[in-house]
Amino acid sequence: MAKITKTATFHVSDLEEKQRLDLYLASQSGELTRTIVAGAVLWLNGKPAKKGNLVQNGDELKIEYTLTVFEGLTPQPVDFPIIHEDDAILVINKPQGLVVHPAAGNWDNTLANGLLHRYGEKILSVQSEGADGIRPGIVHRLDKETSGLMVIALTPSAHRALSSQFKDRSTSKIYIALVSGRMKNTHGTIEKHIRRDPNNRKKMAVCSDEEGRPALTEYTVLRQFRDCALLHLVLHTGRTHQIRVHVNSIGHPIVGDPLYGSEVKEGMMLHAKSLTLTHPTTGERMTFTAKLPRRFFDYLNL
Figure (cartoon, rainbow, N blue to C red):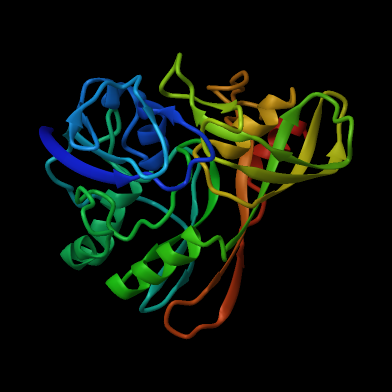
């Protein structure tokens, strides 16, 4: 591991009203948590600033911060079932328990290690500009305990095209989840802003519209059991822990969720079942599916 210092500049243009500087910065970049911002050197319109200063449209923010990063990536054989592979993309059914890329506490045996083992050093060039070198081919992610479909870019041009699709929400993502309790409605939408939990940086939390980032999840009850329900979920935005936070906010945490619910021996019951995207080379609209894992049936004794 090593410590690196980064500098970033932001031009505020997307606020409806004034917002705390630290909250604004934490909403703009996945690596800028409030903890990192609190220990950083900050400037507001060219002058030294504090995390509690208010910012508004037209302001310029500059932050200098320090990150602890992994210095390298080791090729390691990692098992991930392949759904589709061609010269531009790889689609896998990520197993539950597989971490996508190295981070604190999980430096080895990640999907990224497996991709380097499978494709060699050429995959290291397939990532966003300015990335820290440990996310080769990765354009989106699933939580460690979430299983299901992921697409990986195998060329720089495919990475740019896929990243653009996820950014403009032209992909379609469908999940299956088992949630606790009896659902009052058979169909509904959850539209609540999400931000990092100020009391626990490992968690996210719903918040007011003035804070966090907008998030929209649509659900349909496929089957109601005695003390849990099987849901079909359409993800209209892609916020960190979005489904887990949203269903918990309406009183129905995902069965086995170690952060927002209670653990069960079968693990967390969330699975990315379907992924639709436009192929970055052919332009073909493609839909991939992954069947429901055995752990769902084991938990329900089916």
